[in-house]
Amino acid sequence: MQIKISATATATATATATATATVGGSAPGLERREPRSRRFGLARNPAFHGGRINRARSYVYMACRRQCTLQEDVPMASSQSNNRRTAAAYEKCARDYAASVLPQPSAAGAEALRRLADALPSGDGVLEIGSGPGWDADFLEALAVPVHRTDVARAFCEFQAQRGRRAEVFDLLVDEVEGRYAGVLMLCVLQHFERSDLDGVLRKLAQALVPEGVLLLSYPLGEGEFWEHGDSGNYRVVLWSDAGLDDRLRAAGFEVDWASRFDGREAPWRYVLARRTR
Ligand SMILES: C[S@@+](CC[C@H](N)C(=O)[O-])C[C@H]1O[C@@H](n2cnc3c(N)ncnc32)[C@H](O)[C@@H]1O
Image (cartoon, rainbow, N blue to C red; front, side):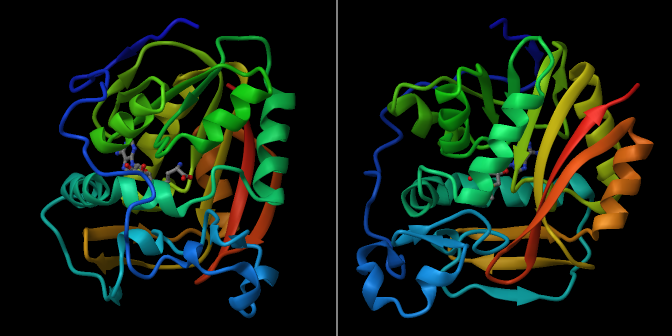
């Protein structure tokens, strides 16, 4: 697959000596050490899976935000600085995050990823934004879909490089995608963009797709915006309703092909598969 990102800050991550933390290292509060049977109630919650955290447990995962508190909206200098603050927090928690999220998707996640794979027109594979540990890319690649993995956090790219995967540093708010892909995958990332940035973000994703290309998103449902504060830093969270997001998708040239809600710990979440129509 040809990689065609033109990024002002793109750098291929290498497994450098700076990445010293051990995957699965000690992070108090992670339920993965508890046998499933002792964690009453969790096994029934679709947000939990086999003793480790599945996606959408929180707006940001517990590993990143022990003793987290939610706070009312605090105005910041600019939307981009809010996202930079969030990215800086991910830099600090990437390894805890990777260790606390199951490598295999939930049943709902697997269904969404299979739908994406089945819906792809012929093309250049899938561009993943905010790849994180890269577990979803692994799943897609096992379905013979090549994935171009990217993340704004170098620590995630380094984590992936250490396990033999190539991921590039790429900031969706700043960098440009020059290539055209059959699909774009962006799971659990959209909530970190300001409301005023969403139209630009969706237009950029549409331009990254071939005609009839497909976009798979997941995001927490709701209204309002706030900061989540944790040990590793502060995470901006912006919520969208079904109708609110679908309006923005249509305005950016997408048509929703399929959507499905699933339960998160603090909010319902939603998968959306949307096709580029123009
Ligand atoms: C909740 S994590 C989701 C990671 C992965 N997709 C998953 O589902 O496990 C949010 C991800 O969004 C990334 N992110 C935040 N802002 C971004 C930006 N401006 N450009 C690209 N990625 C961004 C973070 O670095 C982080 O990897």
